[in-house]
Amino acid sequence: MVSSTMEGWYQTKLFIEHSLWISHDSLHVIVGVLLWMVIGLALRRPLTSWRPWWWLLAAILWNEVVDLWVERWPDPGQQYGEGARDLLLTMLLPTMLAWAARSRPDLFRASVHRKRGG
Image (tube, rainbow, N blue to C red; front, side, top):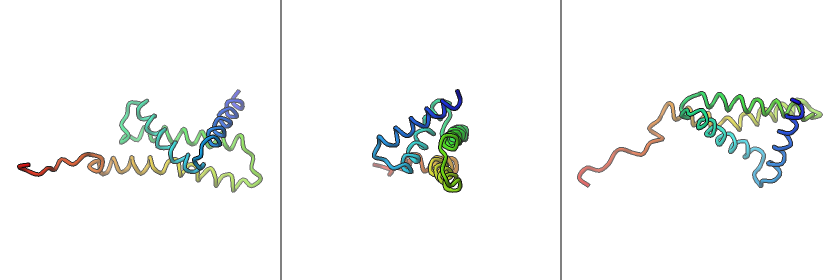
């Protein structure tokens, strides 16, 4: 059952990848940010909380495990490198945005400075 679930997920990913005009790497970046936001909404946690980030990391790790389980490349080093790149591309923007929102929240707010008398 686990194997068929993994195969089904993998085939769904392949269908999505091949039906869009977006590159594989770009898709990882886009999905990473969208999934991070959806997880934050589902958990009812702000994106400044690390909890959505950790759930995203868990989802991405599971996805890469599925890839390793289903795919068999002739060169394991190449396959592991591809997985590492997918992980990095998927987590990079959520990591940078979460860090920026936590350390410099003023960058994410409208300016409160207005001209006086106007």
